[in-house]
Image 1: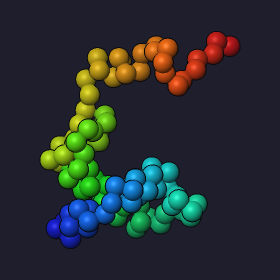
Image 2: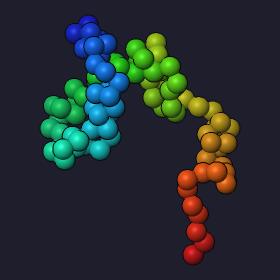
Image 3: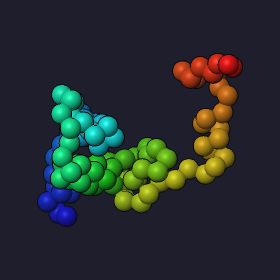
Length: 93
């Protein structure tokens, strides 16, 4: 794991974002599918990177220090409540 930690410390935030997006979508930026091995290694790298640098973790991500960050139900409800400044538009059908 030390090699993975060293590698995570050496990549730029931009590269991290591209790898994270690839893990989330299953595709590289150029549209190529990740292989099973690439998925496994990329996910591991994302988790190690987050454990080193994630100072402002989202719900259910790995926070700096390696702990899983979970928001309370109340916090999540307030984040997803009816907010007029939100980019989400609700339509009644």
